[in-house]
Length: 231
Image (cartoon, rainbow, N blue to C red; front, side):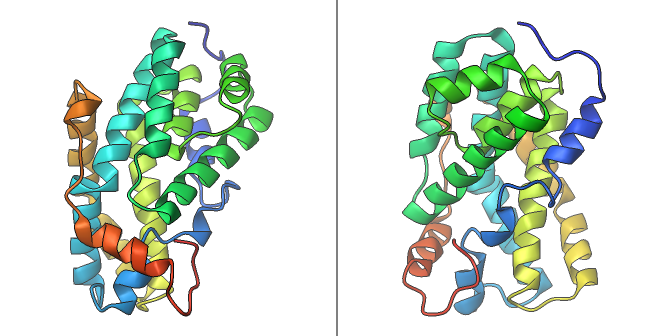
């Protein structure tokens, strides 16, 4: 399929996954806020253990597989397949808050990327799906049509996901900035392993989660008395 020509793929990926990219990621904690409230995350060690589980057996595994499948479908120009993956992604969330988190950020990402980094495929998908796209599918689409390699793009995506949850923890545990960076460094292998596993997935039917506490925390967050975050 036709890809965007010119420019620096790494520059684009860094722009899209920067905390300053206006998708609203700062307003979501993906259950971290409740995990802190319930004493499941108390310090840097418990934060790293929690996020390792989320990456390897939870959202990271699912989003990684969806990202890889979406990237490949877009690269092949198989839009019926892409649309089917996108529809599955919107339903593949355990709670309403996590569904909102992915859908809102995905829609925002597609909207701003169509404006700042245009490509015909982004407009076509936006029109077909009414701008409703889960975040991993939206980022995978942009990466694919802008010629960013799958493994590079997925590594960046999962790094940004992890860094955002660490940022949420820094504001709630609380932890210091140095602790946050040590935690991010400690999770490098978790991100790398999740990327390798996701890229090797042959069928989305083989993918699932094993993080019931994450879903429980998300459900509890919906009625939590005081909240800083939307999930």
